[in-house]
Length: 318
Image (cartoon, rainbow, N blue to C red; front, side, top):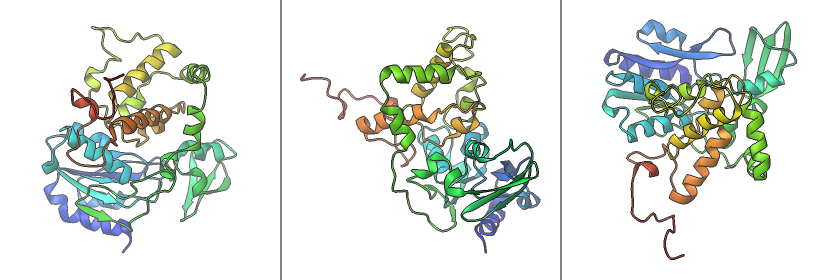
């Protein structure tokens, strides 16, 4: 049987004890998947997996706390599940994890950039191991998967689900690369160049908060500083300074918690490279605290603990 058939069989055997299982189905066209909430065996016919199933479904789990829920996760998604468990934001006894061995997902931003015309409504998609054939506006374009893979997949160290009650598919090897060229290029810029880059980039931000809403670790949306008026942390003026202030607060709240799933960047309608900030932050946390979020159970984020003396910070004896 195929991995999809194995997954359907595994879900079918557990469906009676669950309120729902969160997976993916085809969206408004063949190129886009969308989250699927499976509540009956009939819903299983709509289930899809593969490189077009890009969403990190762990984002829904805190909102379903108290219900018995199943969830399908890729390797990077499983890190978010582990992190939510470590912060007691979800309960393991209420969760059934169907893990996938993932060979990578596509970047829709890269697909749009590679197509000769605005894709609009995609008429047909033919997916193989190495290529993706897309017919849009009457034109067919063949793209190589290596050219349209999400950046996170190029350096993925955890392609197989780290937590799973059922694991489906053939285990994949971790990537050799550990850093991206775009990250190295950004970090090599001078402080003035970085400031100018973010000034220009944040001028595109429309403050839609899609990055916040898509983030699995951003769980306090009802009390977000972006909407607080007492105290007033942020105004509603749409300027590079105010937009950057929001992003810096957001990234600070994710310190030691971000699993680099890329949902913030994927959800951004104006293609702001938000993972440049997240990866830089995570690098500092790893260097100082030797901590990678969501890679082990019962692991507390460094900034949710207190030690008089941190091993990685030399405060005395200067």
